[in-house]
Image 1 (cartoon, rainbow, N blue to C red):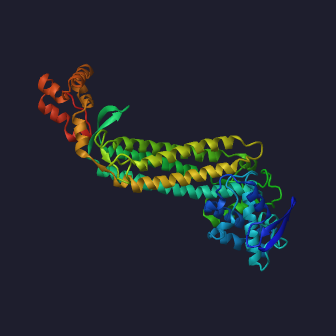
Image 2: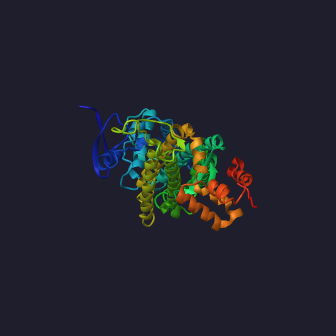
Image 3: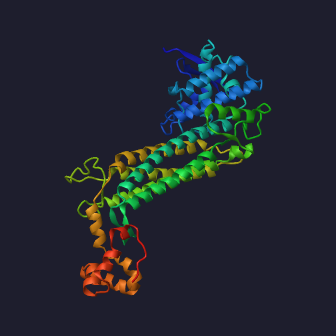
Length: 469
């Protein structure tokens, strides 16, 4: 029989496998919560953030005179191990669990306690020397430790997502420069509008991504407000005088995240509005990237019976029955990722609304939703950039022919011929199949060939200027 140790809590005793570093409360969570199948170890930044929180708390508690140097050193040692990415397999609690995150907090407390005990030369589970609650959780509650760790992890994950968007935005920018002289037809409501360049279209994609990057930088700072020292509900019960500001300052110093202590700890402990804001910005990003992917799919449609203005990289065969068919699989997968993020935003919204009185117990599902959304959309943006945007080429001749054969170019004649005459030309062209040039210059002789050449020069089509009689 494998060696076990006996641990107890106020509900009773349990056998714990000797080799594991978690304890009885984590074991109960492992038994109780079989929801996502995703343990918290799958979010290593969350564990790293928790370790910073526990390290900062231990250092602050020692300064306040409530933890001995021996205990503090053991907690700091164990926390540093977790910060370095060790012991990840010991974090087994499901990402979604009841209890407002208590199971996650206790998973961290127990692992740190047992790593620290071994460092002290003691056996796992000998908590009279280093206790998960009395020492590792000293001056804390799940209700301040969990959201603080969550916000640290969010800060890092948002930064990683920003970097993926920056790579995508730069890729669009390079294509904008490459296609700056490729004349094409602009469209509104899927109908011919007026000429533009493919470069300008891609520059628009770059600009819209850059705007979302700015919004993400703003929301990243919003989540830097933390409630460490609030303990249970924001009254700082069981925390020594001066501890909230002290632990915040230490956490900022050791983590590098510019955290600040909330002015109203009671409000900060129950409010989840910052997560709603993060989720809203994520939804905005998802919608805009997905819209771009819709455009790419339209522009590359064909190759013979669609727009066929651009070519997407050919990634894989597109059909099990239609030979030679290649599908826009990269934009498609990004679309689907965006739909997930949009749905997750509703989960965050409902969970944030569900909080009652001094605590929102639904924070675990908020964490699960935001972590997944950030990870999935980050992956999607890198995939879109590297496997699609970087390899796009333009069908310049097709683009130009569509412009010159389009009825939409009649708009350029408005200042000279007026709306009514221009509309008459467009109607005849549509009915007869004749070109705008043929009707205007050759048949009706409304303008000279020289004037036509001036109006429809490449320079004027790309950078329109007002031309009258």
